[in-house]
Image (cartoon, rainbow, N blue to C red):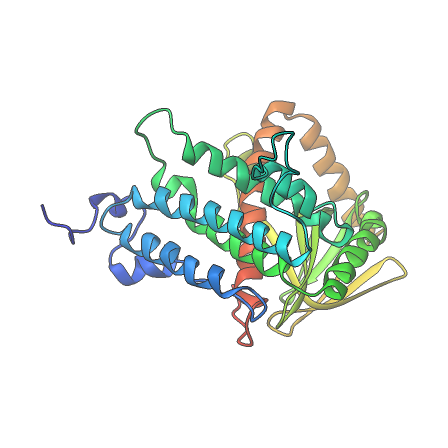
Length: 325
């Protein structure tokens, strides 16, 4: 058997060389200095498994499995930092048992400034259970998004080991942003970006992160489409519109910011007759589309939007070199 023959399947994904494969699919452990060395060393194996998937694509699944185990290691190390025992109290016979992972996770994320990370670690736990208890020989390969999950794992582990003050600040600012950005949830707005003006109807989702090298506000935005039928009926879904702000302010219901390329961004409500006319027209077009088509679009667009956000965080927040997506 030829152990070093690339899988033919990569042609389908438009991969023409090993370098292209590495660029698209291999994720390195980009951790800040406070992340324990055991985690750093363990994550090297994830990168190797992703890299060698070029020759045997089921190794993607092994990379994902290894990543979930590292998440388990991370939460147990954090429990020790917080003086949370990994063991249950002795039973009547004096026997001591280890806590289940689900209980360790609950104990760690009862801490106020860590609560916002609970969902990601519990999700990793569920992935781990699926991988540890297979019901047959099957695999997802590239469709399992092992590389995207690896970036997510790096991000949440980095957050887990940030100092308390930074984590409390992240929580406070995200809470405040929910109220401040609520004014952009209803109406028609102008997004001034990349020397263009785009009409938008909603800031769908926001996420604020403070890394060791960047503070970022990420916005997932709903634009007004000029080709509504093609998007929703013909399912020609565009790339999700994500705005990354390196600095920002919100005053008088106007959002001003600077993006990762040091270009200004502005979002504000508009009452110009032409803009209102286009908004009314768009609302009418949306009402003519079946709800199930809209729900399919939301699902198909929001998932890559959230993965794109994690990629931006991974590339920009954990080192001194700023990488723009």
